[in-house]
Image (cartoon, rainbow, N blue to C red):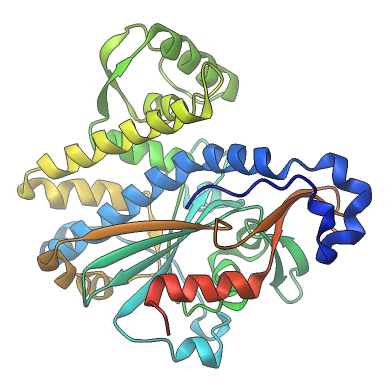
Length: 359
């Protein structure tokens, strides 16, 4: 569900006819592909880390009481934008907001700095404890939505700006009010924190070509992260920083090959998680959780344990997608910013049906 139909002339839609003057600035179809590929690595890897944290904690709940270290974030449950309609959504499904923060902080353990900025990854994690289904709904960061932050900020902006305007509380409120959901909890970590978590998993072993090695080193150098240079090719070991840089390589070949690299990293991580001895869960999780902030308590996480006996079935989608047509570009009201505009009611209906089934 990651492709869009081509829009040869997006100004033909009556909804957006006022933006004709800016038509030359828009390349909806191609831009759509590029944006999706650009954020996919963070979506995939962030999802992996957050799901592993939740599932392992659920499995080892009792031990975690003595060995874990949750970073509990505070949010006002009465200010999350849950409508009366959303409050009546079927029971048995828990929706949790996952935020990947694009912070430039170099201190992964300083949560104030590391978790300040825009949420360039916005995912709704839906856990169905009845049938064991876990669904991921990625909401594209450039979605043009209304953000009601009171005195802090009120008006239209990109979805990822809600977190920077008012933290996880306003970000959740925006998702709920714009997409008709009932989210009351979240998990968040930054890109640098994600690298730390990959290191906790022991890094990955993967095959690297000479072109990929050169590109990896160049990307790491240009972005200023303290990533060790890679000197070998063939089957090599990558630490967290190197794995992240490898996942973001795209200029040496194609977007399709970049997606394959991301899938390889994900596959390696899952294989390592599967082979991890259960006796190591408490120690590994304790290290992971120092980099993750969540509003969930131990009891709430432990409540997800029944899905372990059912066998987890993971599914994913994204908004916008095939089912929700979007127009991408610079519009007269977007203050020069490139955004996605689409029918939010249509998106809301699709998301509810996707998570809960046809109502």
